[in-house]
Image 1: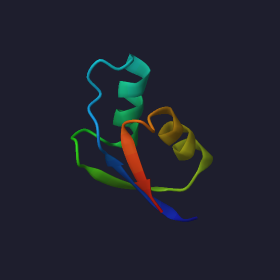
Image 2: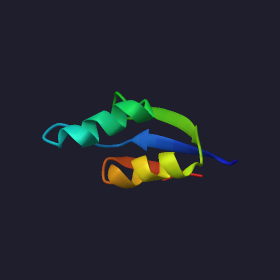
Image 3: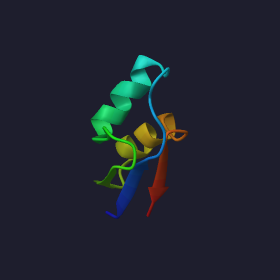
Image 4: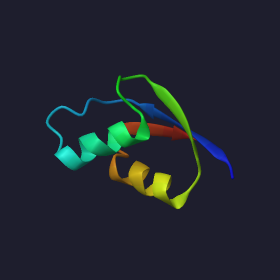
Length: 58
């Protein structure tokens, strides 16, 4: 499968707890941090949940 890069662009302050937990599950802690994941349906669903806090590159 293809790899995708996910970059945290905004803070999780004043966001619901499930969005905070999703960012942690993706491995994103600091703004500007980039992680690489496989392009699976699970990861894509997590990205969709926090798409306003991250940017994605294929």
